[in-house]
Image (cartoon, rainbow, N blue to C red; front, side, top):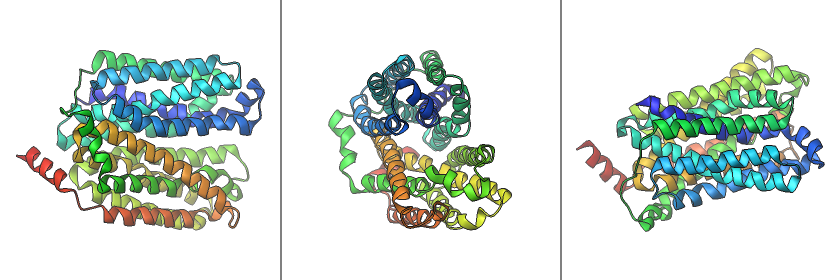
Length: 388
């Protein structure tokens, strides 16, 4: 059964690589397109904003389609967008191509996750979600350095490589994934959970948890400069430890969520992340402790998305494309908010001291998790019917 999930994981790997790798290609792209690095950096911002908007909106628009058709449509847009980006010779054209790419990417993650849920029995949802989202985590550990290495020769090759991965994923889905339909429900019924305060609370937890980590992560090079001495190799070791920790956290989150209440798994992970971020100034004293700290931090932040997805799908299976799309949007809003807060905080504190305030935001996510542990009556009734 899990073999059928591999093309879905490959699709999320392509999306993650496409999103993160651009940051490493900005100088070469700026020179080639005849603009400054800050201007070309807006490609990252525009991609993130388009993804955040398109994930719930297009997720809702395609929620009535069978999952295989929705994924193939999204991957076709994604591959075409990356190919257009690779062929672009002007900044305006490349910007438009990135918007198209993000629109396709916005559907892929939620469609892949809802497909995984539809393929397995309810007691194995966590493992299925972890495997699919493991592709996204693997992109931070492997896709980013590999893509940057390829792009060192020609940035366009990286985009062609990402398009190729998306095409392989589409072929795997077309051949190996059966037609999957979500539980029957009208369009209005699929949108109904959006109005529920509990669902809003779940999305706020996701956003806050990501904001906590990404208050520090974008500035980790500056935060660890005293340790690395500006060495790209040492920084790469730290980032690789973080990426591998994130991948491990995502993969273990599935079995943990299947065995324990998702709220408990989420709360423990966020509490641990709070502690790890709080002690970051101490752990950066030497390379060995810094590598261990980065791996633990990655492990903690790799866990929360899976129990969050599990909670939303269990609450309203028919609305999963919409809810998972909203959760993906919350992830990107959290990343953007965290990065903005981290930049603002550096007006008063050094980058190496960003860990404690990041821990405070993560602690807020932990408190919000405790406030949303009580499940809505509708979900409890649904789970009772499943057990019967």
